[in-house]
Image 1 (tube, each protein chain N blue to C red):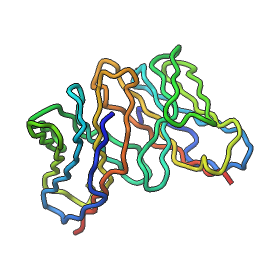
Image 2: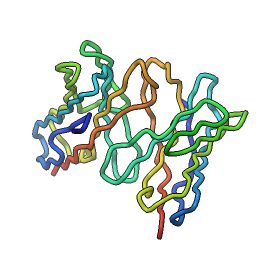
Image 3: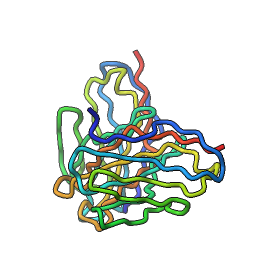
Length: 114
Length: 112
């Protein structure tokens, strides 16, 4: 079984709808991250969390919110989706005791906003 | 975090050794160099990380000269399955944000 799972894997939604992307991990890591990737570009950090009580904005947090329900779960919400939020979204985890730049990524959620 | 520059794309053939060079002229004393691999529609996967000289694991080698202003990822005897985008990242692993900054990467295309 995958260590980092994301649901749904694909989603098509309409402008203005609220949508939640979920991430679960079995690695026991405290640190979790949400990134988005646009075609032909690298990943950009949306939010990150170092533990259940610690949430931080990344470089592109506007239009997004997150919830860290437990050590293993980190959800990303789009309160009112817009077309330029169409992208591939990745969740990742890392172990604070390990290599700080070794992150483990989920399979991604492909979101399309029409 | 220091900016990195790497070729947009490279071509190779099966069985060849591939070297992808990354420039990071503004690397700081505490920065490490990390490489990731990403297949289409998948999340990036950590390949290797180093600080100086040479690091080798079961997947690749990483060569870092003394001035650390560049690094070279070496993939021995590539196969078709090594076709992917390779990202070079530089940063302070002990930094408060612990975030990765990805550039556009190098698309490696391996042909038969």
